[in-house]
Length: 158
Image: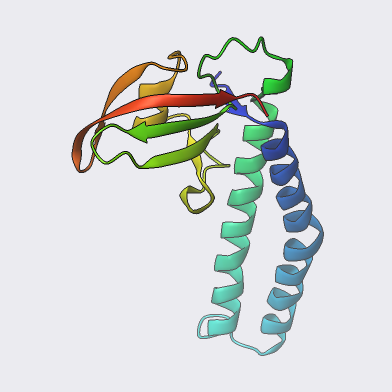
């Protein structure tokens, strides 16, 4: 069985989304289907077909979330030994050795990743290149722009 690593915050977010889908979206879609049926012929009823499509997406997402939660491996970095190594859940600051530009990322599970708020997936090229390295290490990471060399400035177990 595949395990899905996630932070405690990521698990809470998935549980909230699941609750919303089951208690708000599912009843709303069921109501929309019932109203569309009242309009008559279902073969040519666009509202009915749109609602059924929404229902399919909603039910698929519910199954996906339930599966991931059932196979989740919640990792809280606060419980880990703080030895300066880059592991799942840490916040790491890196510096591009060519441009001296610094970036800070939190390494999270796939469902939690959001590059806009500096949360990167544990499966991303940057995270894979940083995992198991320590503060002060220099790493070469292959990015879409080519190979980039970084120094790990700090590792925080927040």
